[in-house]
Length: 145
Image (cartoon, rainbow, N blue to C red; front, side, top):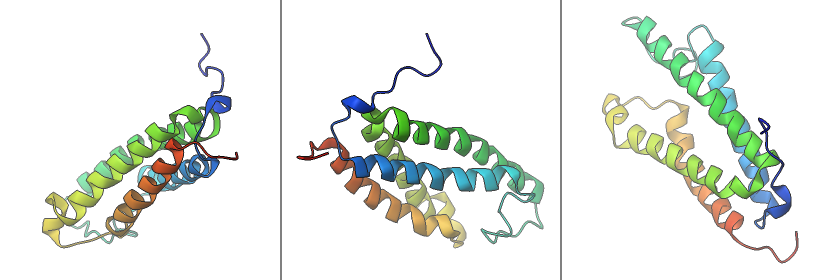
């Protein structure tokens, strides 16, 4: 068995634009993952505006840990979009669930209690709505591909 099974793109019945959206979403996930993992402060201070004067080492470590999760997840999403398009609806559902949980936490959950809203708090609710539209497109059977 090969590490990468044969492509399933020929069997994909959904909209191609949904697959390309998934690819772009994968890139959009990869960029913060790289920032969180490789930037000296993980983006916590310079991007999110978090005060690192107290327990900054822990905050930076948590950002790096999250980046370590984001990078392989993003690469898997990109792989689905490019090579295994029959899984595009599942990839879009992953985005909806992940961003939905982030949006909930940022605006109504534990993170909302701080009153601080980094850029991701604004992007996640939008990503949920847009990904839901592309999920619907990925499940349909386009008349012309």
